[in-house]
Length: 310
Image (cartoon, rainbow, N blue to C red; front, side):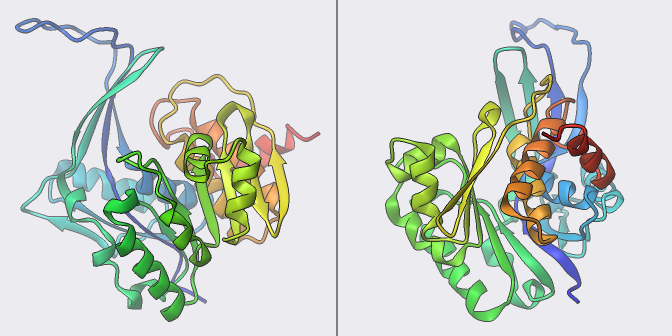
């Protein structure tokens, strides 16, 4: 028995969401909005919150400030079954904040990274990783930190027995380097969205991209929004249709998919079931403001899927 189901490291911050913003006030003016909502944010944190809601026991490594927002995050984590033993609180840096201005057409952000500047692979200790069944990797930035991630993945496989999931994410330099293929042999579950898959693979279709990636890692899963998702494992292509819902806020949709998929993966489900779990968690999560507000617990997920069989 391991102490934790999943070891998660990465960004955690406060999301201050202001919906319905069509324009910013002119200098010297004040506008009144109908609501401002405060949530826990950060892709890694949202992934961990999802796993906790589904009944798994993750540990989260990250950095927050010794401030009101830091205490808010700790309470949310503890309420969702997340171990905070590796969550660092610093007095020299405040908790990160991202202010999201949204309307029906677009979203804009103002972000203060705060404690997230102290989060990274260099702070991960292998003796802690060995206490977990699974390790989830985020924060890859293409060639900027490729070598660091490659060496870390190699060390994970050499020194621990964890399975590894990797959310590749957007390349901030938009170089889409083929060096990513060096990472794949060390990854059990690779996540990316449709745009990322096409850019990195240079293929004409998502199916071709997934087949290429899946030939080099355990499972390659691609998120396609309203088109559902697909995955390749051992040269076999799996698909799962999306679940139509009324979308209120798409924040955290991809991280919610990841959490649902990994929940299925760690509980021994077939690939198609993992995709359906991911699609369902992503769909339910966008039905309310905030990156984790409407994410289901295990019973809610099963009821949702039961009503959508066939």
